[in-house]
Length: 364
Image (cartoon, rainbow, N blue to C red; front, side, top):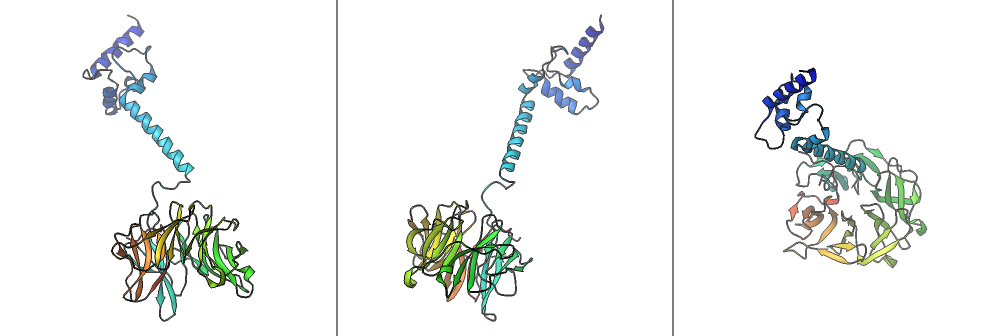
């Protein structure tokens, strides 16, 4: 008997001992399971498919027919697809944005202005950011920083630094972040030269490099914010002879200024899907379609005459934040877009102003 024949017989005997004859097509799964618990066995035994297969007839591609190998292959493909998608998305997490903390201003009767706070969407973990007064807080696109009319700070109030707002005849007011977080677009005006009224772009790092983007012919241009895709900026523009402001859009560089609808408006927020702008008009809330100008109202079910102000969308678009006066005090509330499930967010004897809803992690 030759050495080759001896080896073949030994292989057959070994595989016959290992085989699970309850499995219809081969014994690879059984062998793999057994070998996994017997690390001393040679690896080549686990690669043979059945008792009738010799070393010469081994076909590695047949292993893919095994359920175990098929699962491994599918898992590998899924892992590659997940990694590729994460890389394409810049490492951003999947799913809708998280409804994080809300920043707002509360009137301080001693300082006669607003002090900034943040709070969880359920009204818990109220945090005073700074002891001095500030106005118009807005979260940065990544919700790590907050801008005010004259400064930038971290989401917890640390890292505060003042902006070098231009000195001279041009005053600069409330500002919103550019989509990349590198600049702030703010209201600017000159009491003696109307040609300098409009939107201004400033560096977010220091407030420098001021550039006039728009020119308001009759008064003020006040920014609402950039569209979610960064394609345009929404703002309110004063009407002729002191008439009420209306909604406008412009390209990010200030060009292509165009009106949207004809409602008298007083600030608002882009919808997360970028199709409409949420505004307040005479104490009523409306979503104004940016393509058609059509206005859809949002009223509280059971209290349709309530006056609602300063609306903001939650980051995931499931709730609306607004300010309402009850018992002679302005507090913040949230509700569903259909006006149901009204929830009182703040409840203090002093008036609350200016809110913005970000994705800054909630406190536990």
